[in-house]
Amino acid sequence: MKTYRIAVIPGDGTGPEVVREGLKVLDAAAEKFKFACEKKIFDFSGERYLKTGRLLEEGDAAELKRYSAIYLGAVGHPGVKPGILEAGVLLKLRFALDQYINLRPIKLYNPDFCPLKGKNPEDIDFVVVRENSEGLYKGMGEFKDKGTQDEVAIQVSYNTRKAVERCIRFAFEYCRKRNKKKKLTLCGKTNVLTYAWDLWQRAFYAVAKEYPDIQTDYAHVDATTMWFLKNPEWFDVIVTDNMFGDIITDLGAMIQGGMGIAAGGNINPQGVSMFEPIGGSAPKYTGQNVINPLAAICAVGMMLENLGEVKAAEAVENAVIKVVQTKLKSLAAGKMGYSTSEVGDLVVDYID
View 1 (cartoon, rainbow, N blue to C red):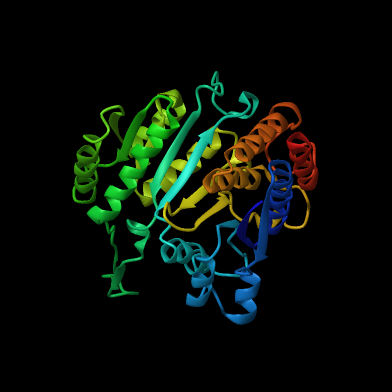
View 2: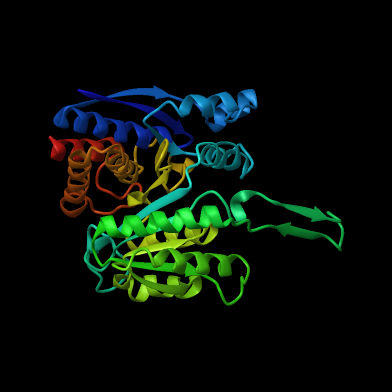
């Protein structure tokens, strides 16, 4: 029996609650498809930071490299200034483990939960490939004359040909493997951001020559948000930079039904990848057993696919689809018609 070592980071707020349901589903899938998971909990929470002042340290990252995958609940604590946990845990993990791809499937399971009129599951089924290690999120910049009327704040969008090209190549390979429309869209802002996006565009069309079977096109980021709402069926795979990817995937989550169903992966194709619901810690719902766990459960499905357990991943997704289509009144917290733990049980029942 194949055994996978899973590092579990429950995190903050409702993170531990949705992780609990995700692990319940993981165990059910493992039992049915005959593999094993050894799980270890890592506490990189806001509570720990408030008590000890510690975030992710060098030794922690080194240990995590020995795992098959990382399963993350959420990062964000109301008692910790915004940005500290995100930079000290989430971004640090991505950079330390070179998780240079953020992968966000955007898939509608039930048109009743879509805010767009007349759109069906076949219309909303695409994937955003976001560069996850550079751009404006590199954290490079400076203040000049801080605190004065002459203050200048400089934030640098740092892009290297190597990082841009490996992200673009991943997107082409993913588009080919996905084998649907076989269309890859570059989302950028070439008309204004003329340095970074000149590099992105040149790299995109250079790599495209190696993939004659993939149709390519380009859209400005503002136009992309417009087409997400008007014609989401135009998209198959989208590749973009760190900031634009962060923005458009939240819009993507809304058109697929909300944050309660939106999962993502931070991918190192040659190393350890991390999977998570993208909705955050939602502290106002902590301990109420009302948060939607399906995004965290979908993250388990993504993790299983990444590990090579494709049949188990398909079983998880099919179980989620059945729950969304036949059981839930809403995907919003407290409005599902079921508690957090009951939704997890429903998914397990369909897997069994």
